[in-house]
Length: 250
Ligand SMILES: [Fe+2]
Ligand SMILES: [Fe+2]
Image (cartoon, rainbow, N blue to C red; front, side):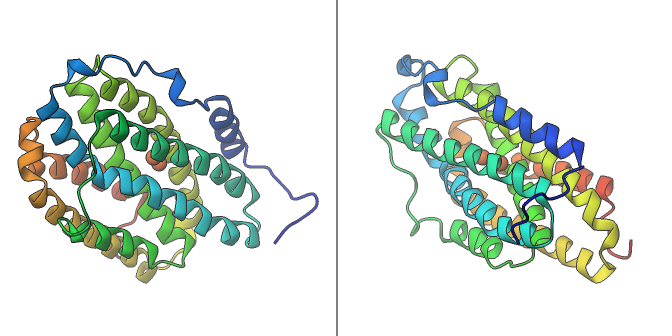
């Protein structure tokens, strides 16, 4: 699994790793002080709708650590290198949201109120296969992209907007990694395995649909239709399915 001097020739992944290293940041990079720009009612609604994202950041930390040993044992050293920096990014996102809840003096939604949220993560965590993991992580990154993007659009000049904008830059690198990894691996996969990726996508979207229903009232408080959110996310995911050629039978 560990090699003294492994071959590392995927320049695209090495550049991405360097970019990730150069772009590390801490919560101090953001101005946290102007809370009153967001009303207490909106703070409460934001705290509710951020819950699946908050959980997703933790699942991403877990996912990275679950995939790393497999990457190393298959000689994918550039991927393992990149994933190490991605783990730091996801840990930072988790830490920032943790701080945001504290600053808002709000709590995430309880497990009891949105059981589907845990089903979504259990579905991801059930995978042992790296490609399914990376595909699941990509869908979760797209989910985060649409969420942070929507929050930035709505509250650009607030702590929520600033945090979202900065986080989006990290998520863009994660998508670039998933794209690179999947475009290398997918041509070696048979159609049955590819169909499993489509199955995973469909399962995750079914669960997200239920989560959207549970969060409907809070989403509407933010002028956000859950159906519209999911529709946009689905179209984005579909673009990736087409681009990567993950159609059943391909
Ligand atoms: Fe993240
Ligand atoms: Fe991510």
